[in-house]
Length: 250
Image 1 (cartoon, one colour):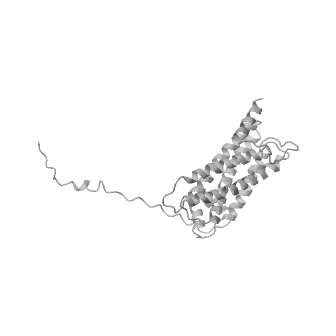
Image 2 (image 1 turned 90 degrees about the vertical axis):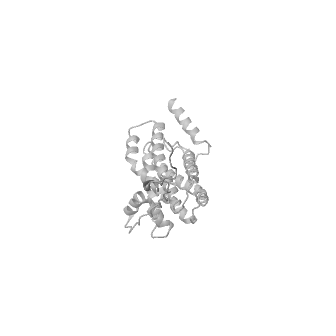
Image 3 (image 1 turned 45 degrees about the vertical axis):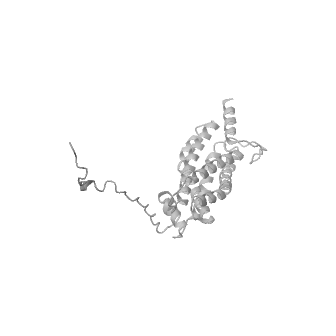
């Protein structure tokens, strides 16, 4: 049976092929007044985009000084729990290693973070990139404090150094992952088409921190007499983990 191809289209199907414009991202919420340490910590955890927007667009106080103190105090506190595993000199050496080692790694990786920011299209001054980095370290510190009771329990109930190293490594990897996420999303704020360059920097930062922990070994276990705080013997962190596991099995 012949059909007429010139029949009018049913009106209900006319808009089927009409492209829908993409939704524009909603602007970050306003932070409002910040009254003290607790307000800044809450804002960093609940409204990280708003904290970054305040900093990048000069909308008000940035909280960088607060976040710096949060990083220093919380990292030292978590280092103290790690030092309790062996006691003695590790009670003050491990907190110092945690704070100084992380600080040195952050300074080492800061130039590459600024370069990746430029490659990603973010028009951010070096000082603001550094402030975002400090905020990321504060996020990591707060998560470490959240896991502190768990680490405390294992510290006094386990004897194996490799097992405790695995516990602390898992806690730290979760914490640093959220820190990298904050840094990445903050520096891409306002960039219409973000890219994956910051993931490369995330990997560089994590590997640098892991290697620093090996340079400052032992982070767990007793500090031997006449053993330097910074080891002069070069060793890749994965080789160090393998050697520690072999010693435990022997």
